[in-house]
Length: 304
Image (tube, rainbow, N blue to C red; front, side, top):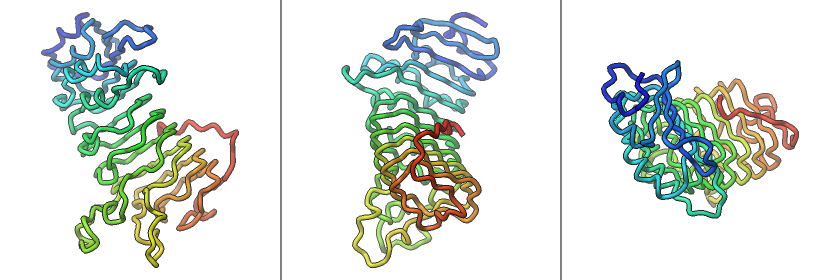
């Protein structure tokens, strides 16, 4: 295989896996180094922009040591990932941010929008407060992993993605609520209280595995789930997880008080280190193992 990845533009076969390592603040790896696994390697000094003409880029793309400044925003846009229809997995890893320099991660991630055919998305050490709305347009997404994105406060709507099976939220220190929706009608996809039940979109229709860990400020799923003054208990109006849910693992979320209802079909479920969690609405000891305080347990479940 040619050393210059730019020479791979007219490959007839789809590359199985490509890794791009940016220089980053640590300067450990040469900027723009690219390699495809399975004994196929290529190198270039062109950075992310070298991916622009690789129309057959497919399988998996892993970008490491992404920076946090404006210098890389244009380069991310030039990668033109949204036209890579064969790309299945996208894994993005940012360099460590010291909190002192300017952070433009949101603009950078906006420029890395992939094609809607994407099935797996990983964001690690992303320091934006929000995630671009294009995530909600990934209608073929199956697995979504967020880890150590410590400034992230707002997640895009995920509950209506039809094929999303696995969600993992790990080390999200600033996240208080998984959904920003303020009303039951919005959560269910209805525009108003007068909307018929037939217009409501299913809540996470394919979800099978949910892992949440070390989200120290997480309080619940919906921002106003405990603020209603209606006579009817609010939880009776909220949707439950789908029957497809098989695994539920929550660990070390000390401010978590509640979660959506769980289905009778749930097979594996544990809640550790969540002393404020109220074991109501199906979360009985027969169905869920709840340990309020367990500081010594060390889980690494965010890649189920």
